[in-house]
Image (cartoon, rainbow, N blue to C red; front, side):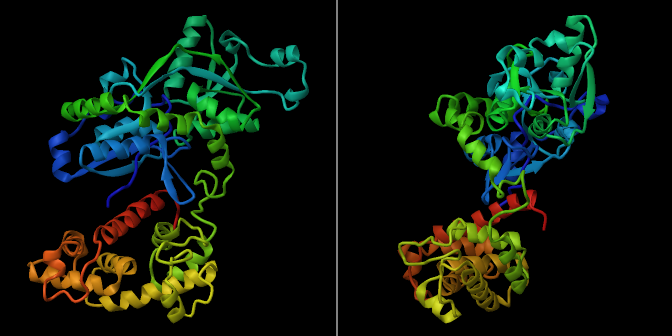
Length: 469
């Protein structure tokens, strides 16, 4: 399933003014074309609130909303990650995505380049500054004197922000309003707001500007940050589409109107912007993709054994997550156990003595995958062969062989999983099919291997976004 991602931090940042040709659509692709392709392409940036990986699972505010939007529209979600925020609107108008799923402040200037959705939430911009290192022991009035208390005190000082962000625009306007100069230290468009705030906490940057909701969640982990000085009034934050995609925009707005009435809407917002405990837990974890390029504690083991079947180790990691969520003590109702959920008899045949032992489980599971793989030597396309192997790992080799027989009988390609044998594995849930004389192994709950394969490849697409091979 296509699921490449395009999301970024819910802040108000956007590309600065470019040449007019870069700010206008160069193609027309509205809802009809999108539905014909079956894919909603969402542009975003990799950040600690919009889209990231945590303990093997893709997460993020925009990502969770987009999943629900795509499901509502009956489309697959393709995430397209943009590394440089200054290029977001350009890439949208060049057709690299259909929706810019990144929190933008809705301004008149931006409306010349894109069409905004109804707003997702309201926020305001605040100054982010570091307290003195000994702030906890300082007398209150000394601490107050050590910090900026009003935006006017920024005159003749320097604030570090991305040049193309709305924060930059706000500082320029603030300078005019105050009748003086606030200087801007221009940062790379590849720096997410949470990373810039982190640099303030470390003392590498003196001041920056952030949306209040982002600043609050970051300050919950870095209490040395002061975020009390506002620099703007409330602003509406939304997503964007191309100006010539009115039907897509209308469909998104209708969905938003209904979704905002649901409890789930506030639950998702609170999960990423108000749940300080979970945020602190993520930030401390080695398996938070913004900290390290690690999926699980077993990455080295997975890499070592994945080579034996010549699979991308990230694909194997996705399979293991699907089986056990990287819990070596995980067990199922059917008595499958361990990281790769081996059954007792299968484990015995593979020489696995302790299914809860990660080394034995991964080694045995890979050996089992290789045995299954060898049964599909007539399938020349490696991706299709991998999908047959995974489905067999889930529901059994001979159920998949039965599905191949049924595919042949119905005039489908028995050597292609996508849209062919996968449909027959679903069909084997119905009596008229599993009672067919050509079917030897009978009923199978086909939705399980069908979803199993799709979900592993969907998660794998996320892993390739965050984790280098």
